Length: 280
Image 1 (cartoon, helix red, strand yellow):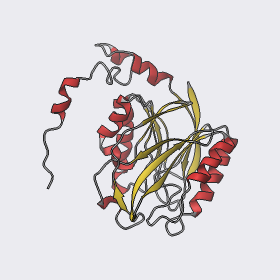
Image 2 (image 1 turned 45 degrees about the horizontal axis):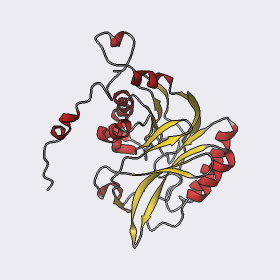
Image 3 (image 1 turned 180 degrees about the horizontal axis):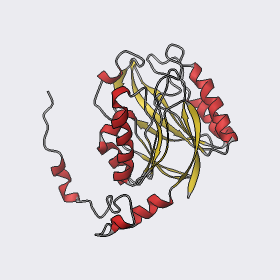
Image 4 (image 1 turned 180 degrees about the vertical axis):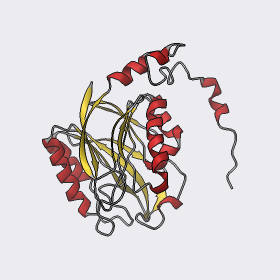
């Protein structure tokens, strides 16, 4: 079982011109659909907005595009908090091919609020507290975001809830973190027996992007420049890995450990994984 993915790594418009990203995104959806894409994935907070108070909401336009073209769209935006004009959740939304919102993920880590204070982003970041997964026409989907790649608990929570496909879109140029970030995206796929998909915003073509599709056993696609990339994603192998158990000779057949979500788990140890931590 599989699907054709359009992975978009755009040259984004910075605030205060970020509303221009909406028309660009709609054009990218139209192009992707014309190339046979069934799923279109965008970066963190793309097409926006990137700051509060929010001056636009792309959700209605993205939902209309999904319905018009019959595609699933994963995109990023902010979600306003009533009576707090400077506060927002950083969210990912999943819209189905009928134009309805199938899922919303509110970023959970780190606690903040410092990570979005000033710079390209500027809002009073608030954390979410849930790890929802969503049924789709193509498999069970989990959503995570950007540097949550450094928190393996996030994607593990999604995988333990059944997520086979994890979208983990990111923000901007990774600079000295690029190599570590790439390794972590693949690691999240390997340890969770999932397909992990990421991309990021570029602000000009000189920046180094990180668009990737990682399977547990291999990275099947990566690009560091701008573009809309078409990748045929197949879930057959990860489902096989999830159905098998680990054994002394499993490394002869598999490039990742089967059984890590079932056979390897020790529920009685969960309370011992984290020692009590006192924050100052």
